[in-house]
Image 1: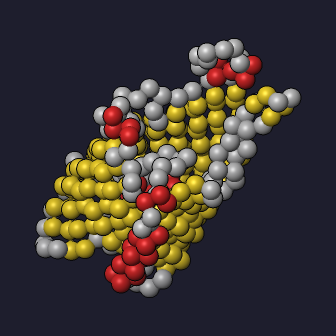
Image 2 (image 1 turned 90 degrees about the horizontal axis):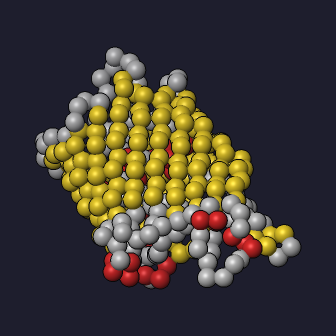
Length: 308
């Protein structure tokens, strides 16, 4: 599995040799994606055996830039049988006058592949909601396109696969399979907006360095048709199964530092700060991301710590 992970890492790296093929995308960015997995991949739901998991993430991107993205996610999931998992994931994103929300129910089915390995398949279904506060925008000249707000809600669903053990994972998912066609025109007027679906590829491995130290590299690739590929390369060091420090690089976009701590057996808190590498650095003081994870044991089994 180590060899598979290194091959996957090298293959994805080759895709990104051309910097012009790795820039920001339409979907929200996450630096601590390895702890926010079921927002992206429903197959992750229920992967923490015997545990009800709750995750809350808040992100302020490009602080200091008016109308910059602000993102919040909430996820709750748990195994309901030895092979099935169930959960709820909520996503809210605000960019300028655009407010977007997703509310999904997530389901997974897991097939054991050996003593330690598992292959999970997942689906998510729910609704995509978008509000455009166009009347709040100031225009130089009166524009009929900005005389009323827009609101729309449409069903959506996604799917994913997730191969994992206690030490590694590889996942592939499309959390919003349907292209949301909010953009409509009537009589030459814009009456809506739209958003494309995105595919996510994630992978990570936890290496034992010493009795107390562990090293966890991970990667995430995000792509959609007609938009350049986005790539995240991360590396974290874990001490005594409690403290964590690491760094991340988003190709041609930003570098990040991450810190985290397991406050109690059930509670973990993490923080990430992104240094912007683009021209936005002249106007922004960077991006901030906070995540809170709470795991409630639902069985009396001894559960080994998981770092994803």
